[in-house]
Image (cartoon, rainbow, N blue to C red):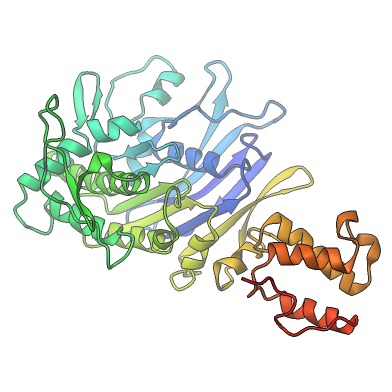
Amino acid sequence: MLRALHLQGVGPAPRFDVEFADRLNVLTGDNGLGKSFLLDVAWWCLAGTWPGMPASPRRDAKQRKISWATLTETGKKEHTYSSAFDRKWQTWLWHPILASRSGLTVYARVDGGFSVWDPVRKHNHGPTQSPAETSHRAGGFHFSPSELWEGLSYEGKIVCNGLIRDWVSWQLMDDGSPQSPFQMLLRVLEGLSPSTQEPIKPGRPTRISVEDVRDYPTLDMPYGNIPVVQASAAMKRILGLAYLIVWTWHEHVQASDLLGKKPDSRFVLLIDEIETHLHPQWQRRIVHALVEVVEGLARKTSVQAILTTHSPLVLASLEPFFDEERDALFLFQLDNRQVHLRQLPWAKQGDANDWLTSEVFRLEQPRSLEAERAIEAAEAFMRGDRDALPKDLSTQERLHAELQRLLPEQDPFWPRWIVVREKGGRRGSLHSGRRAR
């Protein structure tokens, strides 16, 4: 588990300091301030490889250092590490022995790729010649979207069969025991379903092409049976995540048994933009469901999730679930041309609209830009501040026409505006100023 992360002279800010909570860590804020970057660094600290381009140090920085702390499996001991940027080799110094103290890690990247780290299955490449080579060969499995489905090979060895083959194999060989991979997959898919009324149900494997002799997994949808490769983008993302959670745990147990080791109970989830492709109904369930399905993989399994989101509905969905002793909310902000990362005190906002106007998103109103502009002009008119009125909304008649064009008849602003019109000598009732339908 990742306990803390401290960055100096690397990333969009001169310094980042974050103390992670034990269970759930939610990172939010405007685009381009470092949320995905922080997930990449977190992955590197746990696994020793970069999922994409390595983090580049700031050229104006005097110190270029990444420091982090991890917790042992019992959670009672903390290990601290530090890495400096090696200018000669143009890499961050890192030693593979550090990752032996990390738990299982699954990183769902926003580009549709995934990365997996298993301390038991770490690559053993023998001696290396340079710090750059040491860092590059530290370990971890990096899946492109196609490799997730078709399989992953490394140096002539198959390290993952891929979702298509494993799913069918698990299904055909299923013995019905709770720890069989297919039964685990069924539980994870049910837990991650968009609703309890529409659970994700695997169907019978089928052929989909004369040229392709493979059997493909299928889903029994309300409208019929479809191969998984023809599922929606949202469904594919969830299927990929469900598969890799089960695959990571199953292969970890198999490898631990072969090596005579006890399986590691720590499981870290890194998820970038968790709401990607998901319908609002799904967004309300996904975070709580992910934590529950990982905790349900085995007895005493502990999960730490670090995720980013731009969704007010995701944040609203956390209100019944959020525990200030185990969870944390972090906000990236740009103030005076400087990026700041700070932990926010947890406060319930209510619905998604209230989250939009909260400190997290800081919208003036949860409306269109045009409606917001019209209401702000109308409020200035009601205050008697004529200097604040735009030229095209400088009269009561123009304001009223614009409000009629933009606001629905049930909008809560209407009663305030109708009162003003009546005080100004206009006849009307509560409905007179609203657009007819």
